[in-house]
Length: 353
Ligand code: FES
Ligand SMILES: [Fe+2]
Image (cartoon, rainbow, N blue to C red):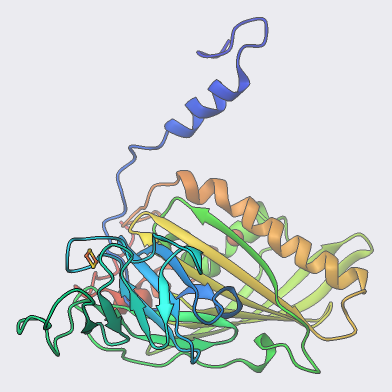
């Protein structure tokens, strides 16, 4: 008999709450958050003159789009008396920030900031104080829009962006590629632990029940990784051969191109909420005309269920800095060495003992 359920069946929800607690105090992975470009929202979720309070990189943020269409990301708290710029009630816009033209107006005392984070108006002051005038009073983060997503550059020392986000024609719906089909979830782990999945060949067989352990040839080059994986899928009609091309552009932007069953493009966008929580977004696109193809739908369903299969392992696993590995495991330590470049303190990869 378990601790929390009685012989009459007990309280199942209390039991599941108890199970959630089991690994809450496991030691956190020692790595900080890696630097790179990360998705903070999809572009179509932020119309002009709207705003969104967010929390990523262990930082409270406010994202807004100006009237002309520019997406701007600020630290959330006003330098005046500390209001969160993203929370207010306004007659015209309801909840959220008031965005006027190319400025955002604080909901507390209506100080107005331009996109650089400078105060451009204090409606009740005769003059803007000299120590504020012309100065950036709020941190404005670098923003890039591509692939239907809004990305920001995170670096713990605020170093300027070191590369750009590439545009993938497959991700932007056009005559050839259909609309994005999106899924998302929160995972209670360090972002590197999720990324390591791609190099962990044996888990595909045992977690995702592939017909065998796939082969993955990977080339790591600067902040890019390019992989080619041959895989045999178990389908209701038997085993089908497939090829999977993987690409990563730093830690926050990955793509996977599936061929063989039906052409499918997957944009994978993990963003750290903090060092031990990841907001994972997946956007699938398939070729127009394939939407009604049951095989196409089954492939996406299968790939989404792979996330559900990985999640309980990520949510509860421990980071092993020096894992015991065997020859069938895949290039896990090569992956870690490549990934270590995204840490400001250059956490070195360790070898198995
Ligand atoms: S707290 Fe923002 S204007 Fe006063
Ligand atoms: Fe996986």
